[in-house]
Image (cartoon, rainbow, N blue to C red; front, top):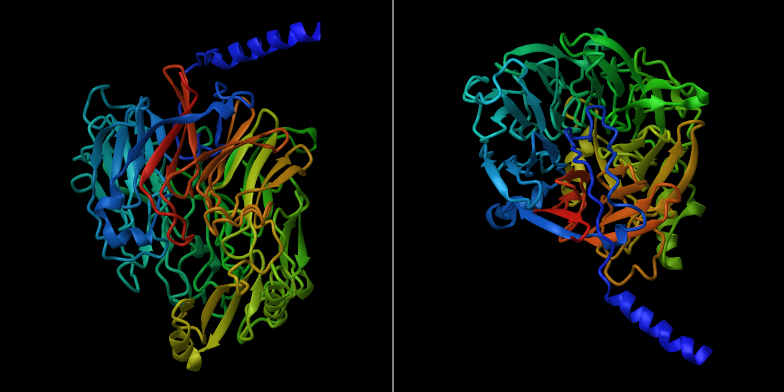
Length: 640
């Protein structure tokens, strides 16, 4: 009997191997109309054609090259391809790091038009050449086929705001001057590249709104970080909001700008801003008090720019703990009571959950005492806010005995680095002996934001973990320190008694001195704020080829965010290896990884076009992460 069944079994296996894979189910077309998926930045798509069962069959469907590798030369060494395209009005819209906007066929990626504002690539900007995204708006008063009835808005590195005809890519003649306005009128810069715009504008109630990214640690009297609203048809300036206006008299500072993406609640007529720290980052003697609406989630009335409410996540910031991510709008079921809320992640690895109408915490927040004894002239806040849940998603205390190293020699060097700095836990103030900032100023959560599945009430959040050492340099010693450390960030803080030096604490082998994992993806149940699972994100394959088998489960620092789909999949690039990954939203298990031609330090997106679901990511690398540079937009889909 066994001998008879064995050949039959082999024959069945052979037939199975030769059989065609199951047909891909037809799906309803689904778009991705905003940088964060929807106007509130949930990064959720109901698309469910790609499932945990078939995601392993994903293949490259198409690629599009911006051409930057061939045409931009040395400027590519200062570029970051962090863009997330949008699908709106039947087309994909993309911007390159050099602000070349383009429209594409969703099925093939073929370019339908390109618009080049011709920015000066000789200028160097604080956050590399960068364009994270575009905004689409349909003018309700315009006839359907009128020029610029559909508009694509792009804010540029050189601080212009363009309105482009979504159909042709031509600049809208009636918007400002030849389709563009100065997005930072009156800005006074220390150098030509001292400010730029990196994140997508938002549009609500006929007003297009832009923030800015301003050079850190250059001077006390920095240019204003004001947010501005422009008429979406004419480009006329409608309002200006300066986060530091509420700081009161006697405050010498600038910045407090909005460099991260913003969110919109169209029904409420509100725009939500994540504001940054005032200038300079690490010394605040010239700006007593808590900084007005700096380091805050601010809800503005989009029509007028008036403040509806504000909630500050860091008081009197001297740690560069900007609010770094798009505020995510969703219904949160904490304690069994569904509420319209704002979920805000921070560089500290904290998650604040606020009522969308009032700004009051949905999940309780307490003020806790923090280390004191700042530098000369400094008046620190005695307390800082901590949410009751979830617990911090990134570690914030490190001791010398926690030092990591692959060898006793390596670990010993890290132990000495940690022991030699001021280190009293989170919010230890900067000092002349050097202070450890942990998490570092590029972690826990950053500009990639979160993905939120409101159906399940679960947030998916990626974080990075590494220590910075920040040293205040007395003015008389600044020039010598600048000359002695040409490869480190040493900045003047002009107008302050100290310059500053910021460096990652790394071992002689170049690895972070803190214990891994250095990158994590986590799921948080917003019913109670508990972490459902957390898994390492990323490998060392492209950082240190050949070590990924030795260093399993260490993760890597990561830049870019996750998305979540209706079938229960999380897609994320972000890590410092060249992969797009898919995780099971229920278990956190990695189900698939697709190789990319360059670093995927961007947030992906997904859509369904003519019944086929695509997952798309910009693969171009990141100058500051030193990941492989490229210029491709890559789309994955199921075969057939």
